[in-house]
Amino acid sequence: MFTPQVPVAKEGYPFIFFSAFCTLLAAIVGMEIPAGILLLVTFFILCFFRDPERFVTDQENAVVSPADGKIICIERVTDSRFTDGEAQKISIFMNVFNVHVNRVPATGRVEKILYSQGKFYSADCDKAGLQNEYCATVITTPQGKKLAFVQIAGLIARRIVCWLEPDDDIIRGRRFGLIRFGSRVDLYLPPDTEIVVQTGQKVCAGETILGHLG
Image 1 (cartoon, rainbow, N blue to C red):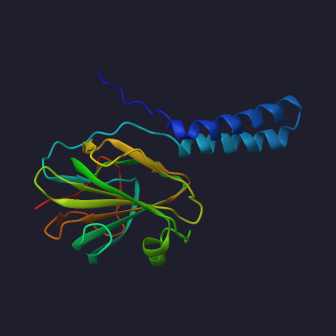
Image 2 (image 1 turned 180 degrees about the vertical axis):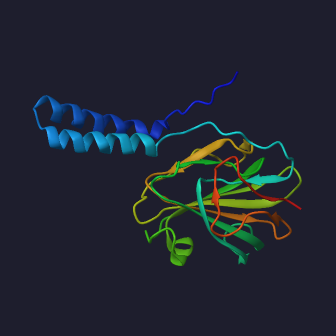
């Protein structure tokens, strides 16, 4: 029987090892209180970079959540930055306790990767989606549907990691990157997508179905 594993994202190794080393050093020299505090910090960092396995739906036209967190916005927009047209936008806020490994929402081919430097407003405010640093991935599905998923830096998160490249063939539910220490992912879907989630709902990357492509 398959037993899900909870590995740790490799991007977290330097932070975990450094914090663990400081904890050990404080314990060796007899600094009990600092050692205890550092042990808690190490445990927090280890939890932050956890990367559990996920069970992905096999429904052909389903779009799954690219991030763990809470849906803070669902709206129809005119998107001139990524998909060049009308879109349904879903914004997902990740707090520091969520898993921060991001997953591909739909199978397709990467058309382009757009990176933009910007500000670092709190990721759950309206200005974050427009002015914060971001990395956007635009893909086309086998059915010809264009959609985009955008990793957005936040007040604390200052490091966006995206492992994708243009022309990559990607599969729904696969890992594609992460954002360090709390942030947000916006998803731009075709206007005829049937949305099956609502604002305030908690979602799980790779597992929660957000909608069905028309």
